[in-house]
Length: 228
Ligand SMILES: C[S@@+](CC[C@H](N)C(=O)[O-])C[C@H]1O[C@@H](n2cnc3c(N)ncnc32)[C@H](O)[C@@H]1O
Image (cartoon, rainbow, N blue to C red; front, side, top):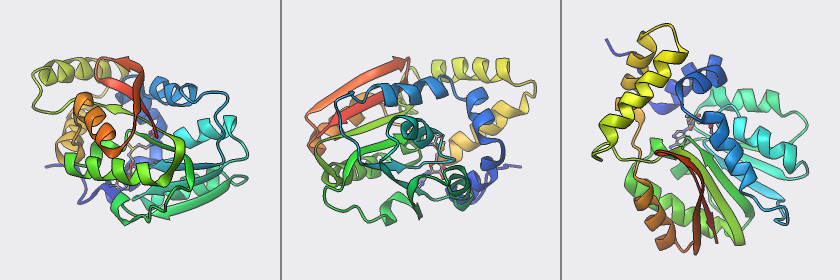
């Protein structure tokens, strides 16, 4: 019987308990890809407002807060348990939490300098990715940056079976219980809709981003950066 929950919010409520350890052991380059987001922001870039879409337990925002301590952070996530962790984790931060899905958030014109998303956009379909890139474009100030990391290959790509083989080896080398990979594949089938990076780069350009680059990649695990 499948162990996946009815929706993404409940799935990540459940997942929140040992989240960082699970992600580190189950997602190749998890920490490195988030570091690449932070490193991709130039030293001269002024950051006073940050939007973290699909913040989870705040692992990416925590990294950004070390560098941009004075900034105000808006964290969006469908999982109440994940946001509860963030509320307790960042008592000193200038924080706004929005509990809900990406398409329920009110994107205002140009209040953000930086928008980030780590391992959250693979949960939305191609059409919603195209739409959200346009909304993010509108909500960034001129010169603002969107930086995101994720698995960026579609499930029907010829390289996808090889990707799954390599991922399986990674998970089984880090976890004694072979059921972990079985669970990951159940979650992947139910909730994950990754898209190829070429498509995402095209959608970013169609949204208006002029300067789109790949600051870090290993295979299809990659960080993308787009400048308005
Ligand atoms: C794999 S976790 C990544 C969390 C965090 N960014 C990280 O890198 O550790 C995906 C997060 O995105 C949230 N999420 C997924 N789809 C969402 C949607 N459509 N709207 C809002 N949150 C969503 C989930 O609740 C979960 O907390």
